[in-house]
Length: 149
Image (tube, rainbow, N blue to C red; front, top):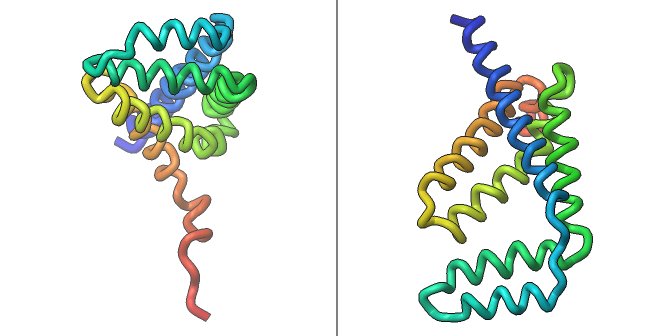
């Protein structure tokens, strides 16, 4: 039983790491749109019934328009995904990925709650990330619990 649990965690590490590497690569596939293009696209969704789509467009486009955040996010996803896949650095990769997977899950929870499939998918990714960190609790639990003097 213990060996099969170990294999499950390896599969989870590879799945999450591969997913993050793929997401990081995708951040560099398309050119960043010009601000005028963003405004024109946003105006198409200015009606009240399309406010959710407008929020998503403005949020994603805003991160791209900073000139650095979208790229930094992509680099972090790539780097931390690679750390997660490599045997000796899996824990540090999972730890560094935690805020990113939380952010992805919350984005889908608040801005795409109508897409249940993606919400479940990102929730599973976040849960895998938490599971990978909790599996290594012996490495970090001393940071949280103070021993009485």
